[in-house]
Image (cartoon, rainbow over the protein chains, first blue to last red):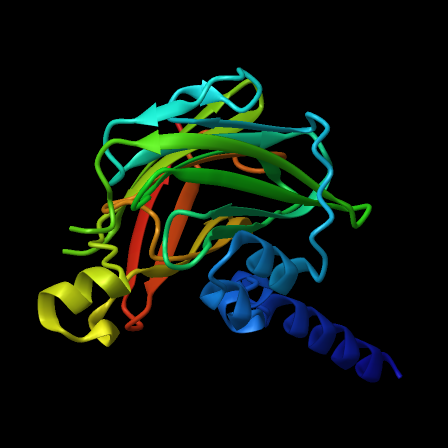
Length: 160
Length: 104
């Protein structure tokens, strides 16, 4: 009896120990391949979340090329090769995705939020021409929160 | 040498990480122009970060990140000064790049 208990305990502990962190990783390129080939933001959001109903109620903060989404101004990026984008949210989130409508495909990046995440991110993206950046936050309540920012791009970034 | 440079700083309980991956991030259209073959495009498709074996960043990415893309992100509840933040990216061709830094 004792031996059996010991065995099952060690087995359990082993099973826990051998699951590497990478198993938890969610590769959305494999899980949802259609997101990455979608040509419009709507199609991509639909492929990702199954709906395109977005709530734009200031719960997502987005700043692109130095202009906040709620500044009322159009942002101007001098080079489309590296546009700084900053976004954050206080909404308890499951995933956060960034889309734009200037390039051949819409999806840029999808984060799966971990329990340690503080949802404040900075990335640099490429845009071939002026367009709109959309950040979608999938809340734990299943709703989609979003913020958009339109920008002018002086020099396209995808033409190389 | 492909890789990723990482900096991590602990401030008021939140660890802020700044990372720069060394990668061309070529798009399909760029490669079609250059080599005539869209399939030559290569870009980072997945980027993750771990601290003490726990995932703190997990992202799937596309070709529209800039060349040598910079990522900044934050996490809390794990990681003390001196702990290592390990980051790994995988690209479309299956190459991987690694980098790590101690939290300061």
